[in-house]
Length: 188
Image (cartoon, rainbow, N blue to C red; front, side):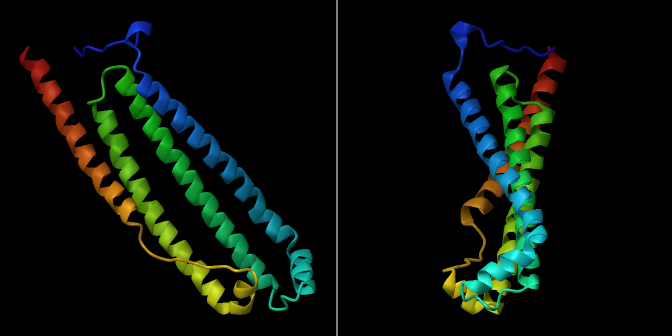
């Protein structure tokens, strides 16, 4: 029998409330970016000829349909990474909810933290591959990149790698905490 503490008005945790508001705001910003990028990817394909002609008129004669297709592919990959970020923060919201309910050490939260760790791994690898692809495009179209002042930085994010490790460790801590709680309830 688990004991949960309801969030009564006199026991409200304003830090958790603020955190929920911040996470929802972040989800909203990422969702807006996702929508814009998801619209831009097919728009680049639909209007590729007029885009190529307009850029060529500005003196960027190396712009061709293949480059526009590559840009559309980058936009689609960015949309996928943004969708992963939304999933990550929704999992975080579920964990925050269990903390507010007074029952954070559950197998569900351990699983959520594990999923968040894998989402972070996929995000890091996806961002790395996306950066490599963008770098190849920029190197192929160096004159265009110089004219548009495009700079691509490819590498692993140290903070992201630490986040991945922390998430997997926390998942084990939560799994162990849930098992200890079950053992304790079984002996009472």
